[in-house]
Length: 519
Image (cartoon, rainbow, N blue to C red):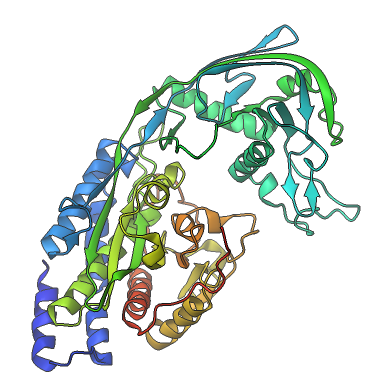
């Protein structure tokens, strides 16, 4: 335990014997969060020793030990039977063995198609395919409206339609929607086909195919894997076969695919043989708890992801200082501040859970395992999730504006109270300029769906996602601790502490008044 906490706890104990923490007390606890200590931790956590913290790899295991040891040294209890670690049973999804023939012509993996699924081993044959245009299912435009694709093979193409004014039909503006936005387009079109009952989906997008097939091929040559996955849930339904394909294969399936969006049934004799290849690659979440003094069965979760993207093909380490080393070390400092309060008799009324999740970079896997497979406390008793993912830098888009800013995402989506508390706490303690630019579920960047808070939000748990925006060093070896702006990191960390303090200590728990039934 660091000396500053001991000194702070003793000094406050002398100055105050009140049951309720005063304003001075709260500021004193927050003052234990310092840029010097954030910097000291981050230079360790984002060092080469941790090898980029790739999920399931030795560097990620070292990161888990670093976090675990920190809570042990602080005397903050584990949430999981004394060992702090929630085992996350991930599987490596290796490149499958696939053969595809169309009208007697064989096509080749990497050259003509790549798999985008973790479907089971099997075969599929058909004498026709359903061409579903752009493969969009949206309120304003639905390719599946008059199509029956249950149990059938569906072919779609990239992009989305425009109206006569040149606006995209889905967004109603010149801005693309998720249906054209890289990996969001891939997942969105897969989900639309699966929800419609398709057995397989072929998605033709030359730009995406060339990018992904090159990346997958290089990784395969290095002995890597395409992805990681969680075990299949018993009620999840059968996974569809999903392929990203070249224009060459697209035209073999639907001859005029490049020239029309009109849906149709096309005669094409197609045979698919698919052999899935997976192997276990376990990982871990880290969870610690400070039990509430009055309402211990109500929980405020503070989260960040402990993983990053590892080592690139050139052997360069992606240290991930901002992503998400900044969130990780800020959580450790917040934990120390709450521990100081506990030492002085001002422990939180509600329980605080410090949840460091794995596999965010692989598809929010650690947080999804927590919410969908093995919640360590009842989701119904979870008041809010405050998720910290990249808070140590300045977005280049804002360099000519006030640097004392932070993007907030999701604070008003599920709880009016949470949004109001967030605003009030900021005005009272940190005076950060909140920027809600990305607080839009239909924003093309899709940030609302791209960090671990989303797995809580989809379960109707109010969330705030704290984010400084991307920058030129995002997912590159140049995301190093010397580029972090530690004064900003300190103030942003204090913001999360003060928000968590208010949520944990207010008389009534916040209400998710905007929650959707059955969400």
